[in-house]
Image 1 (cartoon, rainbow, N blue to C red):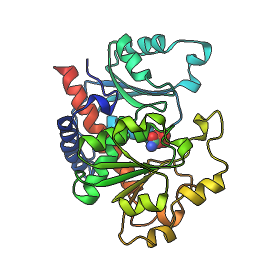
Image 2: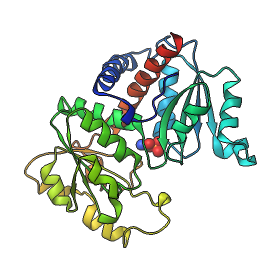
Image 3: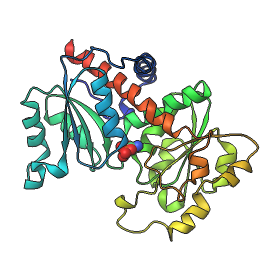
Image 4: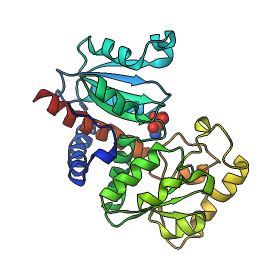
Length: 304
Ligand code: CP
């Protein structure tokens, strides 16, 4: 059985194939009839143990555009609340002839764990602070779309790196494609293992912005913090928030990304988030084509 559990299990050729397949599906979803019949014989369960807007809706739309049958499961409204385990939950769903599971879960490694205990193809839609592979794929795809290619580009990921699955998956994906990666944020929000990942570390936002071609702004994930890692939101914004004045002070125009959800006025001001420099909604739009590509490629292995 094949899975997408993390970018760390992919190689450069895998990413290339996903992008080429996504190019085709992007063309499909711009047609008046946005569907293809490719997966009429596949049933997919979307299991969300954590809140989501973009990822959940984008997977569901991708599945429907491929003509798959889709069931949606939200842990908060399920028998998980009565004490049912993850494996029991998934095996019960699979017994209804489900072929593929898309899962978001708060625990790092939940997807890997599930893949070892159930007989289905698993796609990781975000596991705690570990990986969010389809987000990193759509991020790189969006850089490729805006700047022509990813190789050689300088990308800084700004903010709460410590609690971010988007950061880790982006670091792996960007490095595989030959981009230079920097992380920038307060010392308390940069993980100690960062030295092992071969990325640059910068604590000053202006220096980071002067270096980069692309800045990917992250949200501070207060929900994953048991203690406060920064004195106050106001101080965070003063030191690590991006605004129009700061961007205008640079001698080049950089591309601004954000995985969402945005905390407007904290890590990014509205005049930047809604500007032509930002590709935030392009990222969301590309998420559907990327997820169609990932599902299609995995399903073609199930059918073999
Ligand atoms: N980017 C992202 O994963 O957003 P959601 O949490 O809304 O899915």
